[in-house]
Amino acid sequence: MNILKESKPNILVIGDLMIDHYLWGSCERISPEAPVQVVDISKETTVLGGAGNVINNLKALGADVSVSGVIGDDANGDELVSMLDDIGVDSSNLIVQNGRKTSKKSRIIAVSQQILRYDKESKNAIAKESVLKIVESLQKSIEKYDMVILSDYGKGVLTSELCQSVIALAKEKKIKVLVDPKGSNFNKYDGAYLLTPNKKEAQLATGIDINDEASLKKALLKLKKECNLGISLITLSEDGIATYDGDVKVFPTVAKEVFDVTGAGDTVIASIAFALSAGKDINETAKFANLAAGVVVGKIGSATVTIDEIEEYEASLHKSTSDAHIKTFDEINTLVTRYKGQGKKVVFTNGCFDILHVGHVKYLQIAKSFGDVLIVGLNSDASVSRLKGPTRPVNEAEDRAYLLAALEAVDFVVPFEEDTPYELIKMIAPDVLVKGGDYEGKAVVGTEFAGELKLVDFVDGKSTTKTIQKIQGSTC
Image (cartoon, rainbow, N blue to C red):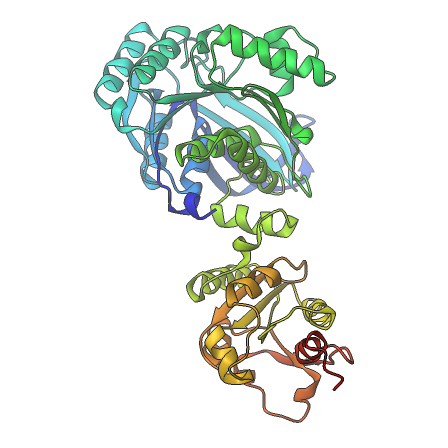
């Protein structure tokens, strides 16, 4: 994840922008004028919708984002531009078309139920003059983008002429174009690097009923050939993502709980664009997109996801490498702040963990049971030598940290140089501080910063010293 955290690609989103407008209230009576509910509105909110949700997802991941498209010369258009400005999106490539209505979808919600939705928008194709203005604008700016996304919601912005002009411009500068398609005719996306149709959209576009591995491969190949794609891809909802790049691969979904799939497609194309821009190959990219989707479907409404949330989610699935669980002081400080903000209980313990044995594992499993997140402070090699003698440690700190981080009970490992983890405990201020049962009646470093102290008895006969003695053939 580190390369993704450090990436800040400049991505252009072109598509159907809209405002999602929510009117929240309560309903306690029926109107005397007609048999309809009377909703007493208490709150009103707006968020970017359509291609704007792709933009929100890219911003959440850390990308610099620019937008191009067409809005109307109306109050909704002004509001949309203001919303883009508020999140730092470059809207200089937006075109205003006189007489066109900027899309705004208003939803009335009472007691968590949507009662009614009403739309104000234009759905006809944008004027040829608007297409020419967008293309002219992009001819001057296309080189500064690392990736282009076409987000098609079928509202008339992404005409065949505009799509083909953008794809031609981008290909000339060796810039990849990714498309979230709409409808059954994908010819207008010809030459894009990849499309992200869902299974239903792919079936409509190819005329192939996807019901097994053979039909999936046939659909992927047909899309690649007929649309001249660099890579063929189909999203499979709960079954994950399928790709064809010389051979067919299916990357299973990693969602633990699904609350709402609204906007998941926007998250998928945003995360694919972000990962590809960071230099990830399609295999790593598909896995990353699956993780991102796994996070957002666990949220309500059109949601976004951050790199930190994806990393945390991956760790919870135990699909990440041990390296991802080894943190510096600064990194763990950031994580702890977020966990505490989420109301999670943080547990801390520490030790040398020189030769990992069953006693260590059982001790750590008990420690984890006291809360939600277990952080293990690990003595450095120099620290171990000062505490245990010049012949220790047997295993280097890097190896000890990696093995600890691989344990299911351990969420994070933080190496420290001092003889005691005083500064680390002070910074973390854990809800629970755990030490071995041999500390009964003794002073424990850092207790003043912890919510409570828990002592855990060691497993009889299990220790690093005894393990070393046995290896050396000692009978002691």
